[in-house]
Length: 410
Image 1 (tube, helix red, strand yellow):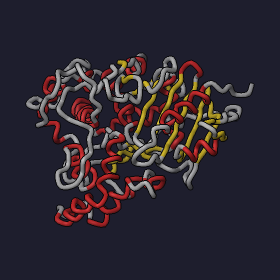
Image 2 (tube, helix red, strand yellow):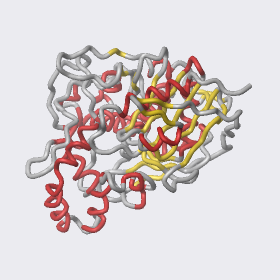
Image 3 (cartoon, helix red, strand yellow):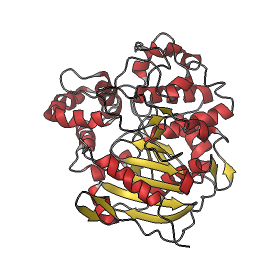
Image 4 (cartoon, one colour):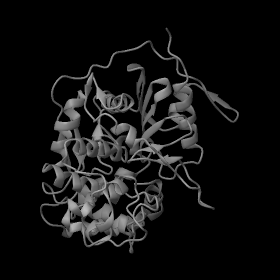
């Protein structure tokens, strides 16, 4: 999901109402009209600092229980958070956090927690939505399945694992190309609601809000637009296909595989959950945008990636896989089109020119930012407005750089 999703929702306004009204004719097992109305408020900028939390209370979900010993996060010497200046304004951390719509923020230096902050009546037990940070989690799971030989090769085609995909645009796309958002399929991450909704908007409403279909269902019939591997095209549908491949390759539901192969071995301190699509009890985990966890467990994921797949002294993600994930393909400038970030790897972003730095990025300001040269991990969970000001992401990244380069007391 991209910022254009929020722009479309804001522009649609009351145009969403006819879609919600038709939900009264949904199958009895589906959500009620009142639940659908609540789900539509998920995107309301007046309340999204709250609606981005504990989404299992409103949406379908699949539990990812923790297990085994918790990975203890040691406390380091408290970090003196840097000041932030923009134009004629100068402010401390609190001013920056409010200005950049922060719900929670945690900083780790050299494996130790040096700063932790919860805002807007959130707390250590609050489960926050990851949005598209879930894509990076999906890539971690692909690496684990590859190491287990459940996936034979990244150069296998999607249809080798999900035969239903062979006839459509995904038929010639390899797992590697899908990881790189270079599947070549004719899909645009554009959310136009109203009387003539776009494909992305239709999938969102019918899979997530109404629970009538699975997010990946259109992948069976979608056509091809470019040669696979040739063109970057950010598509949540690509990640949904990766989730489908994982379930077929492993023979397990994604939430089960996540729990046994990542969440438990990670040493997470709290259960997590995937949001889910499709009819209640039948749909699949929304692995492109639907993971929910507490702040400290997102930080553990960041530290795992910083440490090359190690968690609490154990190799959880195969050695070398994070390096593959974070080997970026730089974006080629397109005349007249602004490129927000610098490059893309396997479901993971290069967001700046800091050497070796990479990030999981989610809609509305969700970040797990990893800065290897300073051994820094920053998790920022946010509630950005539907149409983000142009200054917002640059100011967030500038402050991340300042944090990374601020030494902790000895």
